[in-house]
Amino acid sequence: MYSETVMDHFKNPRNVGEIENADGVGEVGNPVCGDIMKIFLKIENNIVVDAKFKTFGCGAAIASSSMATELVRGKTLEEAWELSNKAVAEALDGLPPIKMHCSVLAEEGIHKAINDYRVKKGLVPWVEKNPHSHEHDEEGTCQH
Amino acid sequence: MGSQRIIYMDHSATTFVKPEVLDAMIPYFTEHFGNPSSVYSIARDSKKAIDAARAQTARTLGADPEEIYFTSGGSESDNWAIKGVAFANRKRGNHIITTQIEHHAVLHTCQFLEKEGFEVTYLPVDQYGLVNPRDLETAITDKTILVSIMYANNEIGTIEPVAELGAIARRHKVYFHTDAVQAIGNIPLDVKASNIDLLSLSAHKFYGPKGVGALYIRKGVRIDNLIHGGGQERKRRAGTENIAGIVGLGKAIELVTADIPGHNVRIQALRDRLIHGVREKIPSVRLNGHPEKRLPGNVNMSFEYIEGESMLLWLDDAGICASTGSACTSGSLEPSHVLLATGLPVELSHGSLRLTLGDANTEADVDVVIEVLPKIVTKLREMSPLYKKSGKEGGCNV
Image (cartoon, rainbow over the protein chains, first blue to last red):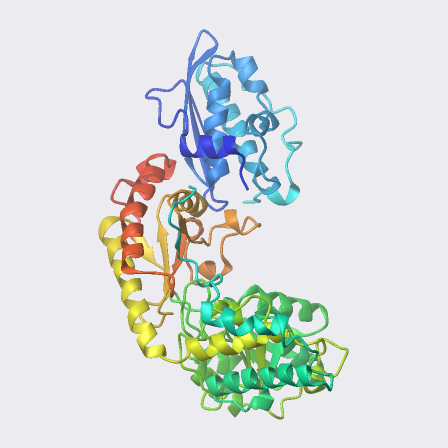
């Protein structure tokens, strides 16, 4: 059901943990839906120098968190903001349709952590471009 | 993986076919393949074999052979019992009573009937998954035509007070159907003593083949046909008989009911070893279902702070086959309706793990799970944002 890349990131998740005094923290999801993702970012000179996560969820949720934190490391905040759920899913060599919401959660977690940083810095938080246009199966969203 | 030993602990999902069962079936594919409706000799062999399987099934249930109808499995039996009784008795009333914890073969059939103008009451259950007979008593109205309550639950293993429920239905002259798919071979059955009018069973849950089951219909029950066509099964269920499957069902039910107490002693000992072992090694765990009134092989536990599918993936990595009530494996995003009906919080429903023991298992298998599972739980808890929040020993004592 999962690609080898998903299984690799599930079994050997990269960047698990917390960053003490993280510059940006984003928690998304809901235990009702069975996934909670918490993303921690360390930001220096507008660059994501470190990214870590903690996730309660299924294999796809853990793999998506792992991949998303990998993809934003070393990126500028603008580049990190551009990371789409589709890019996360593609980097994982695909996710089953019912699991696409896990990649959406990863994108949202990164966005929330970036905006947490921006608000802490006294900057205006960025606005989600198309908050409802994520590419995922309609049935694959938890309405809680 | 490769040559890794598989530890199969999902017997409530399906079972392997016992070699004796397969041996009994083989000749009915190759030699005795005749259509039982035909007149020549090889067809008579097929008919004889079906009659023998019918007699064996009837003996197991305390029924008459003429009350046993072979079907394609548990889902067909449930559909037939419920739709058949509903449509044949709609002049008497349009009310059906079932429970919130039934298998989808019952629940979705009832939901279909709601669209056809029937009214359905879904009885609640207590924290252990037990139906309260008083709730049934009060739910029955003069419009009630059918009560359908499972014998034992497939997810949490809770055994319902079927005899008591059957007596209530009988007193009110309402038909009583029970889905006994999980009960065969685990609980001695007697349809007469328990006032059961209709009973569903499925061969692949008791070491028989998939694709074959039966419906017991007490003589005199008014029921419409579900499958229309030829005159098989005494004109009640059309379609050329699945001879080899029926022979397999007969052999399997004979084997599995030969010594239920002996089987239960062995399987229950494994079950209790597993439950105690897991509880001893893993904190913040709860047992779902009833502590005593449960199927001998059923273990269903919730592990706080983690999600079921990720547990299954790691167990699979260790060669252990199990299942979960978490949404993530169900194809929907809602966790198990059974666990939610017992009042279990959603987080804990997502964190449930079902291990169902059976003839494939040994004490050594159980010990492997007790060895492997704590490591998996620790690993997943360490990456869970819920874990630290609640404190390592778990503030939530459920």
